Every structure is written in structure tokens, then in C-alpha cells.
Picture (tube, protein in one colour):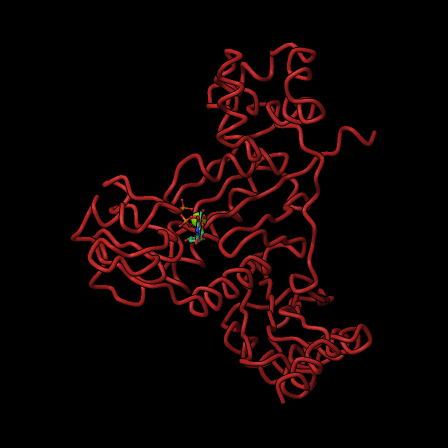
Length: 360
Ligand code: TTP
Ligand code: MG
């Protein structure tokens, strides 16, 4: 039944992303109104606001507003010109954190991504994964994000925006209509100012109004977009999470026939697993930047440790070295039931060589 695909989709969006990264780099800015964008030049600057911290938003400042207007609204705000490469590097590390939880990862902008958590099986488990992702981003990057979980992309996306900042909103399939219907139609991605105005003129204000509107009436106004829009109002959205190459990973794991504390045996199995994933990686023409080692202990507790190189590598010895370090850090007094390895942060070798050639 192709129309009843059951999915669990997570959408993550970083909170006031550029501003939060700047505050992390300059902790004395915490709690202050921070505006990242063009130089205001004492109120005469041209250009726009990229983003504003939540404190600055209280003054009415928002993305895409002329910087001169932002200056008028709050001349005492801290104005910062953007440091794009800093945001890009931070974004890449956040995507790497996400890639630890599912291979099906789609980055949609610098601070936003979808993750397909269908294999997690239940919304309860997906919620636990979301909590772990939030914790990892807080601990490793000192940043907050908002996450939404739903049975389709549109529900997950609307849910991530529902309780910003630092939100986590889970909408189970049976809760979808109850969640969506009271929200304004503008919350539907793709319903911009113009569409919203036209809907309002038709007396359609809430998503629930749109869901129950007469389809012919909608079609006469919006043509082909009408049906898609009405389906989105019900949370119906067939789009899949589209995995990109850089989000791919190669992994293998082994369960020991008996739980073991024998370090030589565990390291031997690790070496074999690494040889195996390395072989696949070479065959497919990739190099890898991140190695993740998973250990499940006798009590079924599972721990994952990821280590990244500065540049992607193809050399087995180099990748093995970081896998061994990660493994040794994970071993304690408990016996081990299973170990696994994963290579991620993959880059195609051809592309990489071309890049080096272009600049060399
Ligand atoms: P958003 O996720 O739209 O905004 P945000 O992360 O700053 O705030 P929120 O907590 O509401 O999610 O965009 C991500 C980054 O993209 C943002 O930090 C700066 C940049 N951006 C622009 O440069 N111009 C824009 O008009 C928008 C919307 C974003
Ligand atoms: Mg954001």
C-alpha cells in the first residue's frame, strides 16, 4: 500500500544560529541583544539583518530587516558582521553529530536537517534519540537547537518551530490533526505572505480551516497548488528524507558468541571490522573523516564514541589508530557483548583530488 507509508521523521533547526555561535565565541555577550548582519554605520548602514538573538528579537528585530531599522529599534544592541566560515564549520560538526543516529540525513540549510528515524520503530525511541542529539549538541558545541518529530516532513518541520528556542515537540500520528489544525496557515512551509493573504480573504485563517475548505473553491484560486496545500494541512507529505553523499556512512558490527573482557580479542575483532569497512570505502571511491566505535556491554548499555580527523583519510592504519583509541576509551570493568565501527564524513576521492588540483 504505497499511500500508507509509515515513517518517523525528525527535523532539527538551530536556535538563532549565527548569533548563538557568536555568543559562544564571546561568552560576555550572553543575555545581551546581539544582531548579526551588515554594519549599521550609526544608523546609515545599508544591507540587512542575518539573524538576531532572542533578546534582540524582543525589540522587534528579525532576519532580513534593514540593518538601519534594527539600529533604530535598539541602538545599544551588539552588531556583528558575519563570520561565515565559522558558521559553516560549526554546521558541519552538527551534521556529523546527527549522522551518528541515522544514515538517512538530509541537510536543507546551514542550520537545518531532516533525519529519518523510521528504523527506531516507535515515537518513544525517536524522542529518546532527539534528547541525546540535543545533549550532544549542547555538550560538544555549546549550542541549543529545536527538534520536531512527526510522521512526515511537514509535521516534523512545523513541530520543530513550535517551541523555540531549545524545544522538543513530538507529534504522534494520531495527534497530527489536533496539533496542526489550531495553527495559523502561515506555519505551512510554502505558504508565504501572498498566499496567506489570499487565504485570509477567503476566510481561511487556521490550518484546520484549510483542511476543511472546499477543494473546488481552493482550486479556482490556487490551481494545482490547492490540492498539495490541503494535503499538507492534514500533515500528508510523501517526500522522503533524501540522503546526500556526505551524510552516508559505512558500518559493520559483530556480536561476540560469549560476552568478553579479553582486550586482545576485542581489538582483533575491531581490526577485522575496520578492514571490512575500509575495503568497502575504497571500493566505492570514498575517503572518511570520522570513525565511530560502538560498544554494547553485557548489561545491554550501549556507548558510541566518535573521533574525527582534520582531513578525510584513506589510509587504513590512520583510521585504525583512531578506532583503537575510541575503543580503549570505552572499555571498563564490564564485559562486552558487541562492537561496531562506522566510517562517516565521507568524501569522494575524485572530487577531493580535483579540488586540490584546482587550487594547487
Ligand atoms: P533560521 O533558522 O531561519 O534562523 P535562526 O537560526 O537565526 O533563528 P531560529 O531560532 O528562529 O531558527 O536561519 C538560520 C541562519 O541562516 C541564521 O542564523 C542566519 C541565516 N539567515 C540569513 O542570513 N538571512 C535570513 O533571512 C534568514 C532567515 C537566515
Ligand atoms: Mg534556525
